[in-house]
Image 1 (cartoon, one colour):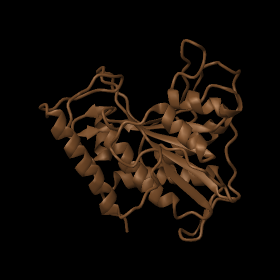
Image 2 (cartoon, helix red, strand yellow):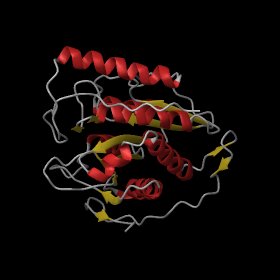
Image 3 (tube, helix red, strand yellow):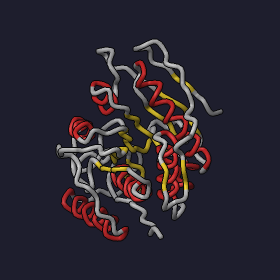
Image 4 (spheres, rainbow, N blue to C red):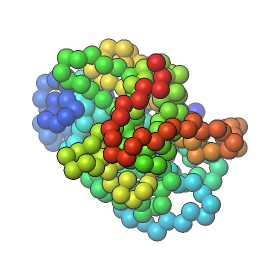
Amino acid sequence: MMTSFIPHFPETAASGRKSAGALRPLSPGIRRALSTVLLTLSLSVLGILLPAGAAPVQAMHNGKTVIVLDPGHGGSDIGANYAPYVEKAMTLCTAIYLYQELSQYDNVEVYLTRTEDKDVSLAERVDFAHSVNADFLLSLHFNAVGTGEVKSGSMILPSAFGSLYSQECSYGLLNLQQLSAIGLKSHGFWTRLGRTGADYFGIIRRSTNYNMPAVITEHCFLDNENDRKFLAQPDSYQKLAHADATALAQYLHLQSTALGVNYSGYARPVIQTPPAGVPVLINPIP
């Protein structure tokens, strides 16, 4: 039985593309100490021993499917901040539950790019996934607009290029379906190119260079009232993790003796690949 842990980290709004809300400022030392205590508590309460991550290791597939979970942000990079929610804590909590569920599948190795509240560069995250021969890298995030524009729901950020786009959107459609089933609106797939014509998002761009399937899942908007109602549920993070785990199991054709599920013959959706380099927006679910 999983124990609920709701990571609400008091923080002040920070500069960056994800920032909203405000609280009375705390000193940097207090914020670091509080973050460390709460994240350590989340691990000890769940009783999970997690692989270290963010350091190259010698990996052997041995016929196993390798999944790398990337809890977005961490350390000085707090991510989206809308009181009382702070993204860096939420992504790690979701990743912990997701790790726990995926570990119950047969012939699967699961790694995390971070297991504590610390800075890990985008390059380190992707390079670690590559070092363990990851079959799939899932980067976990939450969103916030911070401009007064009201948005809600989930979106998938895949590569804009070739076969990776098709693979990642095939998984993404499954992920959006599972997230919709727990009450989150779907915003479909979003791709974005940088000034050089490569993928804009660093996680996706570097994974594409390795020809490694990777997706960023933005689970919901912290500054949306309906999404916050969902997050206020005591089991919201377990629900998000279960949705992600089911989508990964379906896409990667996993089975679990412990859970009594078998997706080995699951028919994955086929997504047509657009012309290479063309940013597209697809809304597969109304």
